[in-house]
Amino acid sequence: MSRLSLVALVVLALLAGQVRAQQAITAKSPDGKRIAQANGKQITVTDAQTNKAIVSIRAHAVDITSLAYSHDGKLLASADKDGKVYLFDISTGKALRSLKANANTSKIAFSADGRKLEATAAAGKRTFDVATGKEVK
Image 1 (cartoon, rainbow, N blue to C red):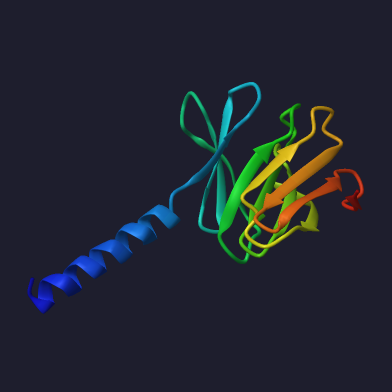
Image 2: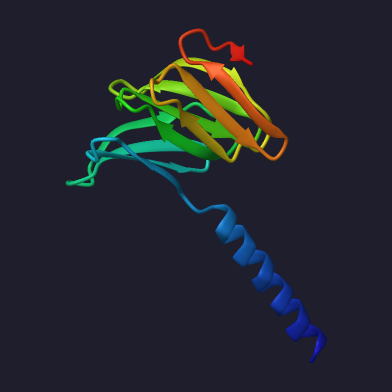
C-alpha cells in the first residue's frame, strides 16, 4: 500500500469518527408532540407532526451530550461535555436552573415523580433535587 493511500485511509477514519461524534442528541416529549434535538451547543424543539421549530435554545458553551424531558413534559434537561446541566421551561425555552454534574455526562433522566434528576457519566451518577438544584445523596 502506498504512503498516500495509507494517509487517505487515516483521514477517512478520522472523519468518520468526527461524524459519529457530531450526531444529533434527541428526546421525545412524553405526549409525543415535541422532539428536542441538540446539535453541538444548540437545542431545537420541533412539532413532531409538522416538523416546525417551536423554540431554539442556546445556553451551553460546549457540545451537548444528553437531553431528557420531565414526565409531565414541562421541563427539558440538557447536559454537556463539561458536566453542566440546564433545566429549561419548555414552553418558553428559558433556563430555570443550572447544575454541575460530572464531565461527559452521557445520560440524564428525571425520576418518575419529577422531583429528582439523575446525571450519569463514566465517573459515576449524581442525583439532584429539581426544585433546589442541590445534590441529594
